[in-house]
Length: 317
Image (cartoon, rainbow, N blue to C red; front, side, top):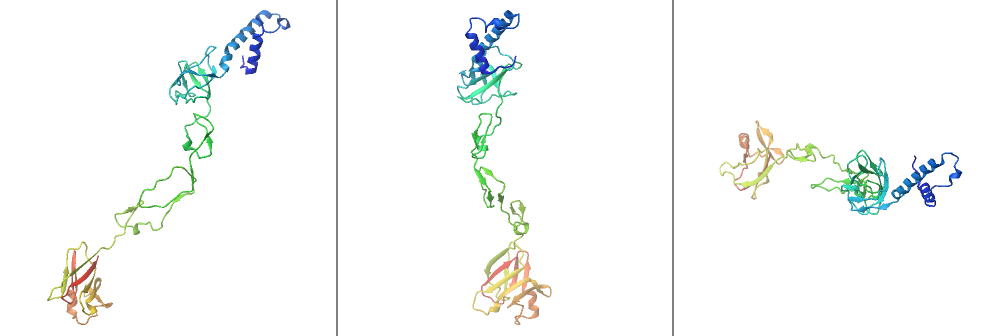
């Protein structure tokens, strides 16, 4: 027998209630087997009358997780019921008349919300109730763009709360930067710089995944007094081997006592002297003296400054 509508059910029940025992006027029936037909009809009506309560949305009794419902008929495969939840079960394990209640084809309890109607059906083989499938998913309002609506296992027509950040642009800095939660439309970017190359980064330093290859030249400064007899200033203990040294005699002496000694220039294969922009232009030095103007050591140097007064110096690697 097919499922009847609520109006058909009401009409049948009302017809039965208005008669003492039979439905309608038996004399109007065309069949000759009127007694058996009317008995069968009365039995169907009685059954439908008993099931009428199952089609009315009853408010669940019991507790939020141990629900009790009035069931007029016999539980058979697919037996449907609709009830109004009286309390929130918060997704905890729930039973209806001691039988488990699950999401469709799972053993996971659905989330029931007080005041909302839920339709369930009985599964004979598992001896449990399954809630009628509707919206599914585990998204929450924080996962959905603000002003957009969605549905999940718990409810329908929910409004999202995720803020729309639009195009987000990030400039690298020396500290971590928090990416604000929200929707980004894909047009944002992290600013790049063409100067972010190994040659611009000091050796041993890594910046945003780029290992530096640049080795900076070191330097040192100081002051000392040359030997009184040879006028040679000797410096040691540097952390590098110098290639160029600049000296300046710290007294009122001619400017040619301000000198640049460099291994970039040489005389007879020895480091040379730059003075007044020329290689050893001071004629007061004899050719033989060039050999000892600038001597390089692994951690220092010796230079002839030509004067015995305190001499300031700066040495470059």
